[in-house]
Image (cartoon, rainbow, N blue to C red):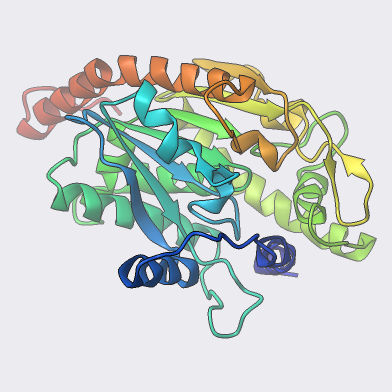
Length: 332
């Protein structure tokens, strides 16, 4: 079974999870209702959640497969990226990126696979940043679950961009200072294969049998090999590995640790730190108030990254300028 079939399994369950969203009694104007409807049916691409006050950094959120660029980060109508974080990092422009993995629907089915989503992320960010004349602004990624694999693949693609081959795409990797992975299955661990862990993510929403597991195991070997390309460039970023500490109830009703610490944290990673979040896999990215312990932890780490990023990224771009002008030798 191609890896795309795994996306289908995950998409089926996630679509059910999003189907019964409680309605609001708030009366919306015609314009507001139109905007809300458009976002419900086409929540893809970049959405600016907070423009920032004299922004000097971009925080970019990437949801998991078949998630939603707003609902993934929301509980009780509170989207912490939009409603809470701007008060703690006022000089950040906060963006959320959505992509189409709704393969359960013929009308909105996606022919893209994982790497295609990654290149689209890079392309969308490049376009937004060029149009707003912010192409060298530092970036911090916040990625949930398999969205972290999309971000990794995006940075691999960006690093490979050179003159004559989508050179502008390289600006994303050059501008990336830090990444907060939240429940991303980076590897197998403690005798559990990456395929088993990917199945865990899917089983939060749907059941799967041993036959599917075998296919996931084979495809996960390919995925692991591809993401091996990420290791050489990972040292260019400050990394926070957030992991869940509570089990998640899956479709069959049995709670499991979807992505345990042994998979969510890469041992020996350079300039990296593990971060415990007292929540399950779904709720580790949902914070109802600024008093939430998980929010305090996450926002604190993001504040430190935001403070450190400008000087480092400015120096990186200055070095790149010297290389391009031929005043500094290129090390190979």
